[in-house]
Length: 181
Image (cartoon, rainbow, N blue to C red; front, side, top):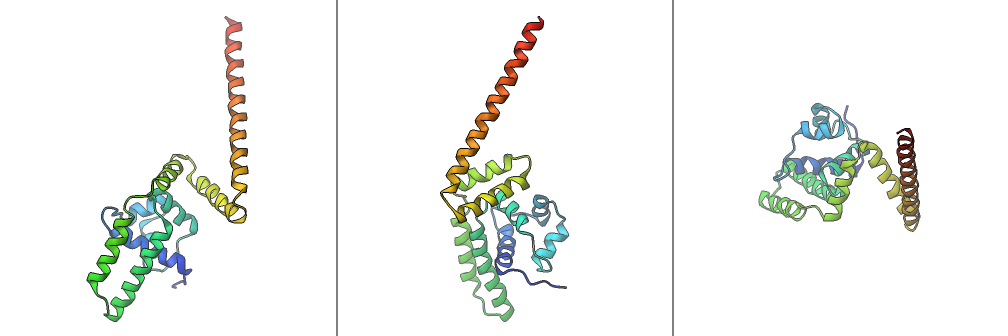
């Protein structure tokens, strides 16, 4: 039974499929599956539009490969039109290749801030939690952008408290070992 995907998710899948086949990225379905903890046949089902990936899976791909989701959706739009035109035999392959090469070459190098963010997320032990926290921050920013500064202040204060507690514990351990000698 085929399902109807949300348009953005469908376009993302079209784009991811094209991106994964394009140099210098080239990713196998098995590699894509490993990132989200699913099997290669599941990726095949996504690429054949039998099932839609979950938003958390899309977020994991975006983070792991340093993708710009909007750019992949744009690439998907072009790919979907190509597929539709191919079905009706009205495509000019040279124009299509030029469009794909332009998009991929423009975005082959990730903007440094995006790469830095992706590197930070990769360093988390619990990547799903890191993605969830980032999703929450994104939603808070949509509601009240100024609130992010307050959250950053709270995080820095919490970090200082943790550091002070750890330093205090370390000193207690050192003093305890000194008194035994």
